[in-house]
Image: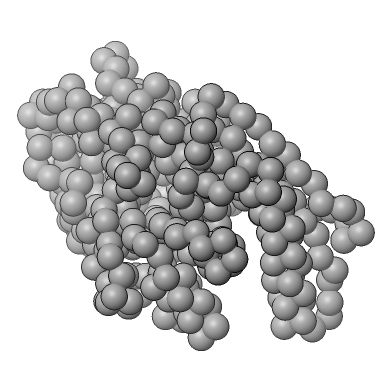
Length: 383
């Protein structure tokens, strides 16, 4: 049976078990409808350069995941190190895919997730085997508010990314905002919007029985994005008015955040979980009253979609594709970095909480972001 070849630039692995998990969920969603083979090539930073390639493969239903770990020598000069790493990356995928196609035949379609650097494989497959490919972009780096943005990257990176986008059959974006930004950079591309997806077995409506009002907030490893410090300043002001609430912050926490909570006198109201399993995240989100996102920039955050699928109303900033999913029925939109607006919104959501129909929020979001809904949209790309 023909398979869809997924080529992600980010994907969960032994090197990082969380990065690219949203791409893995896209693969799982598509695998409901057709066989998907994910091949992810990653540099194994923990192994000696003399170690041979390590290949791990797992099949779950219609989804096969092949993770290829490679190593390259360390050189004193940075540019030589990067050059040799790219050469090793290229040699790995050329050998692997030549063997894969000779044994299993050509895939029905090729799909890149995040152009650089998996898109290099797609360009090679297009030239060698005449295989057309699709690209899905997830990166929030087309927003200049992101310090590590597309426009600040080296010219070689910008050129290669544009080449990968221009030569693709379609460019799938998870938001209209991202589609607009990519079309501004590469006007000739054809864009299609297909959102991120949510595992509805973990994120679903559940009646809350807890006494206090529970806010939740997702902390990212990308410093400067989520503006957690700004949120803590606002919660400090809110604490002067009301103390009948708690806020659970899940995700990797830096020591300075813990110290700030202590300094602000919020230790009784704010709890950090650190990095936890996806299953545990589901438990926390299902039990929440409201989700707060005070981000400086975003694309389409899965954390917001997950909250909505649990029927949890959201306070979020008007950044990226967020205004496309938050409205007066499921939350409140505010300006980024506007702490006064955030404080007012926190007060309002507690005061007017009874006006939110949590079950309706969850049902509407499930219809838009479930594995089945998104998987169906993805499957139509290849017909």
